[in-house]
Amino acid sequence: MVWPHRLPMIELGALLLFGVAIVGLIVAFAAIVKALFWVVLLPIRVVFWALGAILMLPLLLFKVLAGGLMALLAVPLFLVKALFGGLMALLAVPLFLLGLIAAAIALAFGVLLPALPLILLVALFWYLVRPQPATLARN
Image (tube, rainbow, N blue to C red; front, side):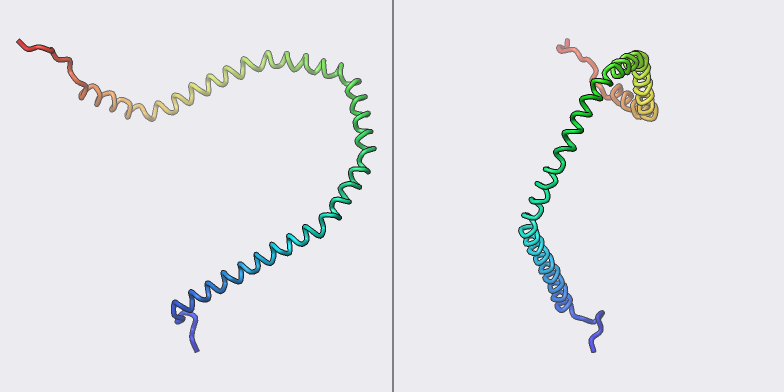
């Protein structure tokens, strides 16, 4: 009797190859069955789509008529809503811009304050290693 942990590597490789082949066959069989179902059931789906479209036409006509009537009745309400919306926007836009400016300042300080020691070190390094102006001609 051979225990699984004592199987030589070639048998383990063959077992893995066999498993991959079985999975490949199952996937290929599933793809073929799916294609056959699609081809066989397609005419039935087309018939149901056409029937559903024909049955939906009266409902769509009712929806268009009712929507048009409601639009005619609701136009004054939409105008009042637009007026109040515009007034609220006149109040909200400056406050929103102030909030954006405050957020940008907070973000800038939130990034610059922790980086301040590094910025000062870079400035000091640049100051120490920058070239000094020299005369072009010597006496």
